Amino acid sequence: MKKIDRSNKVRTGFHQAKWDEPVIFELSQAGERGVLVPQADPEVQECAGDVLAGLPPALIRKTPPALPEISQPRVLRHYARLSQQTLGADVNMEIGQGTCTVKYSPKINDQLARLPGMAEMHPLQDESTAQGILEIFHATDLYMREISGMDRFSFQPGGGSQAILAMASIAFAYFSSLGEADKRDEIITTIYSHPSDAAAPHVKGYKIIYLHPDKDGYPDLEAFKDAVSERTAGFFVANPEDTGVYNKRVLEFTKLVHEHGGLTGYDQANVNGLLGVTRAKEAGFDMCFFNLHKSFSTPHGCGGPAVGAVGVLKHLERFIPGPLIDFDGEKYCFNYGFADTEFGIGKVRTFYGAAPVVLKTYAWIRSMGPDGLYQVAKTSVLNNNYMFKKLMELDVVDAPYIPGKQRVEQVRYTLEKLFEQTGVSTADVQRRMMDFGMHYWQSHHPYYIPEPMTLEPTETPSKEDIDEYIATLKYIFEEAKADPEHVKSAPHSSVCHQLDESGMDDPEKWAITWRTYLKKYK
Image (cartoon, rainbow, N blue to C red):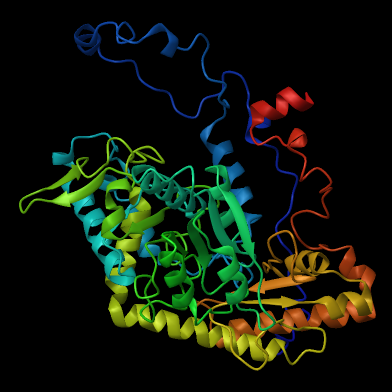
């Protein structure tokens, strides 16, 4: 048996599980069953009568739903095989998802969310039967207030982008109540804030004013002074921005907006290095949001179960999406009375929030305590700046802006030198990292920083983990110099080889459901 050299941190022998697994609909066999649902007893049928009779005809299906017909063992094998082909926080080091904090999520919290009393709840059941989870929602609201300085939180938004849309809707409702909605039609943001800080207000109908950085990488204050006017509805910004640069003069920005009558919204997706250090209120913000499925250690939603908890100060509370949850001294109850019936934004999503996500957040905060949350920030910043120092020692890595100063919880690097020397792009490096079981993220489009590489270690990885990640990047950089075509043709040991991405920007070529696929390509 060949002896493996374990002194090398680079996992050159890694190979991801790989096979051509069909879509579950392609595995379907007519008449095959995984579960046989028993017929109701005769006395139940007699008591229930015709259960469809009370439904409007438009709600009754003419044909059964087109669900896959497949046995339990084949379902199990299918999803087990898919899980083995997945890169994620449980099977690889999630250092490479900059701007979208991904950390280890305690498995005991997942177990809590899967307890029968929790998993079998329904969001429409009477509040008297849901006192436990309503208490958790209420307590988590109080924690969010303390962490941010806001006066009230809604857990209804299904993620950060929807929380930004909620903030834009709150701004529109607020100015509608003042008779100024037509006049105040602009939202200011920065090019290094998350693109949703522009996209979501644009969906709401706002004109977007982009603020570019000054020579040091901070939002340009002089340009901001020129941009703010009586047309400004709000200033939506991430701080630190997606570069990892923290704007220490942010209070000057928020004060200037308030002097012109506008509102301020804080994108706190990048809060992991600030927990227990700074608060939105003291920075002059009227609104903020947190991604509970990232910063507060419930698993990353990836478009699935998630919560973008949106908080507001008192003067905006009547516009926040609801219902909210109150405690009257005896019981927890839904509060619909806060809403402005004329201008309130109502719901931005059904029900009142993803309960399992809020439960996991509550459990994580309770286990950490205030000192633990502060330690999260300190360790995140330490990990990030250790990685930053080590990567900046490599001749092909650079980081624009604030030379000689540390970043906060992440860094947007540039591999422009590597590309100029070898022709190997950041996308090539990204695909090659898959051959070592690691994830790597570039940047949002458009690339304002050339050949970007955005990394966020969080507090989760150990020094040994970070050293392995750095060693792997260094290995690939050396490989690019010696054999650039090998890097360009990666991945070689992952689930799939290079994909044809020519249709990624063409919605006409998208097929996000099996039904859409059949319509377009069958």
